[in-house]
Length: 359
Image (tube, rainbow, N blue to C red):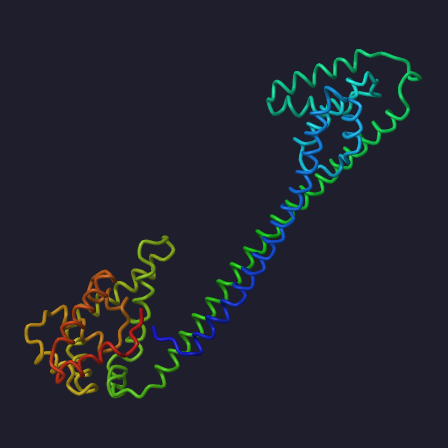
């Protein structure tokens, strides 16, 4: 297929929205990477604080508690860091011989390490939880400042959970939206590509119709010879080719088309008149073929006749009782034979392949 500049313009126009989408997606990816990198840097700073608190736990548990209390739990980025903070915070309270108002925070660590199979941390968290539960002291004996800080940390953890739920929902929404956009872009691209192909085919068909050809006499002769039956046979050949082996509903039309094709195959007089029409309309073209290729096989000669008449490849496949891929191969071999002839024969005979054969 030969594309004009207009066809290339259609293809380029089709590619522009796809390229725009790719650039936009890449830009969003860069933003996501930047966001993740920023979140990781913040998370790393909190991990550093947890490491320092753990180092201070033995010698300065009061400093460790102050450091852990200064961490804003709602700003932590993952459940592993939350669980480690909860374990260290509860451990610091226990090391300072203070009484926690409840076991809410240590249960965060217990649940996480049990779920993830971290047996050492889970046993440590369970020991701290049991120590907290075992301390039954009156409410007046609890440290008011510690209680206030403890409740503040519980609220911060609640904010963290809510933020994670919103983030999860947002991620799912982005994934669904991305998939939907990808599907829409894919469908839009297919429609644009189909339209570009259709426009190219229409443009090519228009150019072929506008070409000045030397076989108008042939077309008139064939039309007079076959009349409406010629058009019926050529059209129904394509229908029959597509209907073979399909559902029972098409059996009637398949049988009708098959009967028409068999009648044309058996009608040798029609083929002879068709040869005469080709010779009259195309300057003794078939005589030239006989002269240039005296040993041509009957099937190849019939192929040349049908090609010269402008039959479609599917119609020729059915008329010659061959598969369509065999017709393509035989056309290629016949074209090669004709191309190998001298210019005296090859130039006029090559015209049978230049009339826009239908598929």
